[in-house]
Image (tube, rainbow, N blue to C red):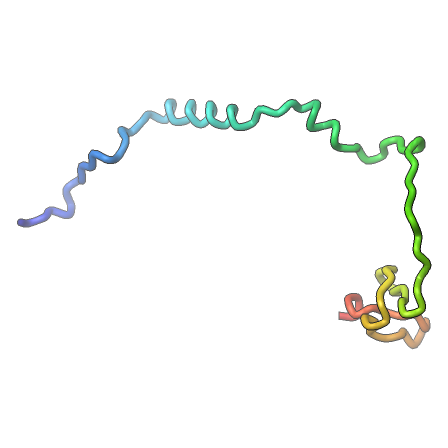
Length: 101
């Protein structure tokens, strides 16, 4: 049996081609159903920059720097001595391996 590969194929499994208007209407309907959130409820969880926090209290337990720790002179983070890369010759301040890398 010879097969004409240039002939258009007919496949019963494919859905009928819809018009552009029908496809866009379906897409709008599906996208509007997916997002059904109350904007006020979502906005309550966010704080705007510059908000008045003068009445808020913050309680943090501060631990003093230990003997085997140092403060990096570049990133100003406290690191363990094992992450000391070098001590700057000019300033005499320590630099961590992350900043030296």
